[in-house]
Image (tube, rainbow, N blue to C red; front, side, top):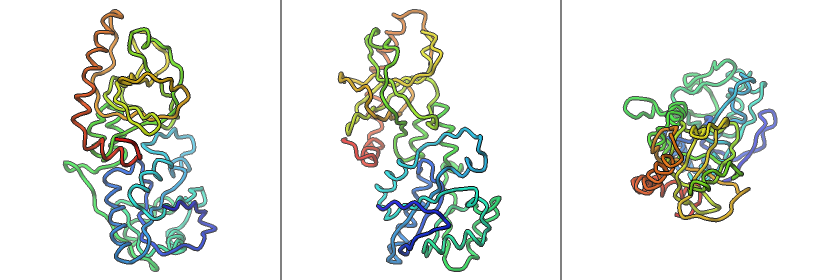
Length: 319
């Protein structure tokens, strides 16, 4: 897959394409339907299949002081799209000038990108103050527009905001179903308080960026990526209230793993919440609960083998 960054004022000469357009945070199963339609139509037209997104998040340009969190960053989107067998990934620089484009000027950008057919969701808006919509796109000349209807589960639209809400509530199982793969956050393994080692449950502590969406405080069954391998793990998110921590930590007790991985880039994958965060009356009570939690990890993971297989393929990991 080619990745091409584009300034709308200086668009290079590009091959014809059918192109799915959107911000695509998380590339959930609703987004995947748009992309599959673009792939099918590109094949019929004998042109390349493209996906176009924006960087940075348009909301950041419109609301500069907003603190934004995302399901996936640009690199993750590129990885997921590459495994979806998209031919080209267009990253459009979203500037204040781009945000202020008229409907007609936006249509010209689409034509300059040599897009023969634009594939978008039924609620897609564009142009200054969101003046453009599917009706204005379908009236545009120079390219065709195909609109994908609402992709739903139990009559509710599948959206990035719904998935974000589920993750923040700790319902990572439902979030994973809507994503079509196991949700993960990435970062670097750093030194922590090392209390887990004292308790007999050594942990790898993850330092993440400010835009990562963290699951609700609690204990989770999941995986930790070490280089190209995934290892079952008991993951804790929270303040360790038994010790009255002032800062939130994300740490994983990796089952049957004993290597030193400080400074190693990694991902924590969240499969199922085992329990909420809790303050224990003694260290012995905490240790007993951790032992129970650890025994629950593998049975939980074994129930989610289909998502595991898809996830390892998406991230090119060993299964």
